[in-house]
Image (cartoon, rainbow, N blue to C red):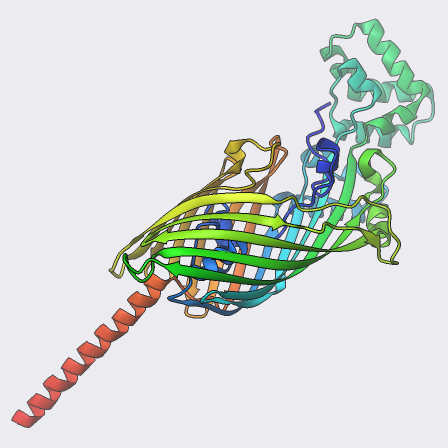
Length: 476
């Protein structure tokens, strides 16, 4: 059988690091399209979320009161939903599901909003975020009689064999069924004919051994609401120009989280996948809640079009002390989001034409204090090209994987799309698609300046046209 590639994405670190670690679950499509950058950016709401000092650089524009709605989905979740529908239509036929297609995956679906709202600009920011992520982790059972023999059989064959033997009348029929589904795999593993016969006889004598081969599943979901207040103060470099300077900032954040985890009877809460419907039914009985207070600190240095930023995120965190919804402690261990030191730089090339207005490039590092993550996975690379005063094209690298995005802005509304890959412990990845809709987000300063210049040019042309008409009329 294949190796177990994942545990539940919400509580894996407790197994690997002996410490319960909470992940950050808020996402932004514009940032993800550029490889998850943010600490050295300005002009977006995620800029201040990643580094409060960037608020001090927002002296030439505001991100006016904004509301953001977002959603993400893993395509594997669509497959899982379709397979679950097949199972619902045939609840007594476990062979209705293509188990091999689902193995070693963590299909997920997430939401950002509708409480992601606030104001940022000219040194001050106050905002809320709300996020939700639900995951179904599916893997194989490693502790079974076949893996101990080094035999790999198709899980769909296991389920089909189990379905057939449930209607067999005697041991001879059962042996014929097992030979039909497993004999070729047993021989391919190097067992002799006599050894194959002996192992198949074990199955005939104890058909319950097949249950050891049933895939395992675990359901989990996390929802979060945060309230943030931040301030950034800029010390200008008047000798250079009116935009250059150094800025310092801080954020205070209150976070309330809710967590639901299926309580399976297997290791780490995993249960045979045929118990999945029951896990859905009991999920509401295993909801926990906890609050946390934390803070971010940052510094940004801007010299004309170049920005360098550094931020310490989730510092001085009180952590999460989980309680059941009835107020009783216990059930799951206390946890926290570990502090992170992020730093990086960006450079913007500005143009004054109707085709291209701005090109930005980013080089950043995230979670540099994490001893369990390689520097390649900490690297964030991104680029953004602003075209036609409304279209943004983005590309980046996130956790060593390529990301891509596109954004469209019309005055006080933006739509952002992103594709990226979520990594689990550097050995499992999951494709994700993300969409954000933001109302109230201003465009970049260069676009605002270009818009003003364009309006002035239109006014000048109109004035000249009126003057020519008046002169012509006077001549007549």
